[in-house]
Length: 337
Image (cartoon, rainbow, N blue to C red):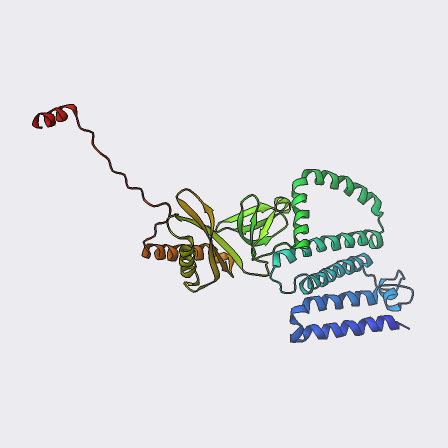
């Protein structure tokens, strides 16, 4: 028998994959399906004792056709590595990153998986196709790896820190974060080496992943409730605190130019000799609008205080300067008297 049932099954599955790749609904996976079909076809004609067709094509008989066995073996391993890499990318897209809203993080894992897959393919080619002992290659590569590791110690630290950040996922692309060093901004991407933030000034800050991994990070986007903003103002202690608190709360609540502000309130936080310090607290749904909303609230509260003739800070002190009379003027005054 020229071919066995295994080879027939491989051909049938390869045909199904080719047909599926031609259907428009599977267009996004066409290259993966075609590559899988090519891998199955190569497997179906590879020589073994039960495969007469493969033995004929790759055999050493005088009447058989000569085909480069090594070429097909290398092609099988490389196509297999490419197919496995594509499957891992799909798995990452469907499991860890189902919404695909963090393409840089997904690319980080995909690149690492790709390196591992092709390393395994290289070892397979050396052992099974070229019949070369891999031990000597591994010994040489081990020494080389030590040298490269020492030279790239900081870079490798950033790489593994980036992996740790993407596994733990304390923040992701689009989140607003603040580091204990004072850096604050919106996360643009987390790549192999660094995390990129866009600050309030629309500048891009590049921070090594190893620094971010060691820092205390405040995530302002991932929270179950609204974010709260706070600012302080001082008013003369001669004004009743209850009246001031009611006036501030009335001016602060409402919509700040279309931006939703809810639950704003004020309380007295400190008492001095001539002033009282008040804290104004307001809730907002989007942390990115904090500065604009705070500016609008300060404007509205300031207008309300001015309308009520209340000065921010201590009351102005009126100072009257009396000019001291000269001796000549005093003598003239005495003579008149």
